[in-house]
Image (cartoon, rainbow, N blue to C red; front, side, top):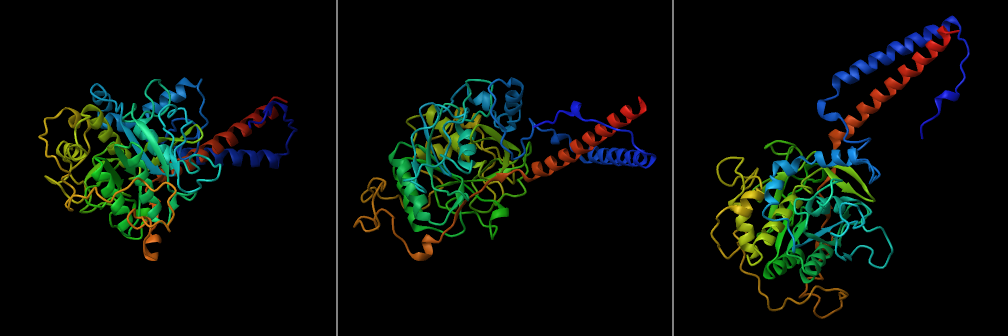
Length: 440
């Protein structure tokens, strides 16, 4: 809370005190000049402060809301406004298997369906205690019916939230993630976004993904971040055949984001840094990570599925690959995959049907033997093995974590901004004191 400085009393200072004041003023001016010299042009906050810190939602603050909207550079990069002339994702359900989704966030009201909590199913907890899943959901389906806040690339799609990540934004059991995938498939998802992963494979999760493919669902996953990975190998499930593995680009650039994991399994790229996202309970933050590139590809798949409702999931995948903007070596490469996802081309280009998923080099998954998602099934159920609910002890130690974080560079800029503020405040106080003394 701001202090009322008009009530402060001052008394005359001795010569030593005036000398100290002059010294402090000179020091403040020096700090200010240095701070101004090192602050980059991009360091101006969209509103105070927004670098990884929640900002209270204020429906009456049109200026702040417009600034949030204007900061969404990825919409221009991907030609969103042109794409929306053809499709907005209406009628498509996208499952966000993540840390949960706060459907009460102003940008997501009316966009979030009843979901499933596999972490604390019997406890009354926040819908998304971390905020990661809410950010992912906003990038996919943030509302576009006003001028406030974050808008998604597929603003008329619906989000099906499935919570599998705990309050530390991770989960140590791949079977839970597999269960979430199956539940999402059985509850209407046509696209699944997995902004999480780990280094070890999982037979149970592979079976769940095959279950999704067998029921005509597009699966998108992030390739992972170097900062949270013991090795620079594309995460699982992104490297599962048939999954669209998404790596990330730097802000306003066709260069790979410095923190992105990439490799042979990489399929597409999308913006991954300097992104503004929705954060519970009604604020925003700037984020970075392949976690936030993947939902832009998932949203593009939703646009295509809305535009071509009869098109198979395999042909949707093929269309995304065939229309990607090639930004690396000619053809598919290990850094960018097929290139930058291109929503406009994916919606409008002439692409022959192939009637299969070109990324899936496994045998077609069998439909016989796949039952519904195991809602309350226990490990003692005789069908549990068939449904992928059991596994070796080694498999249950598989670690899933989110591939996204607050923008570290933005945090550095926040400290610089704080230094400037302190210097200005110190200088102002000293100037007031000198003026009062000279007027006596």
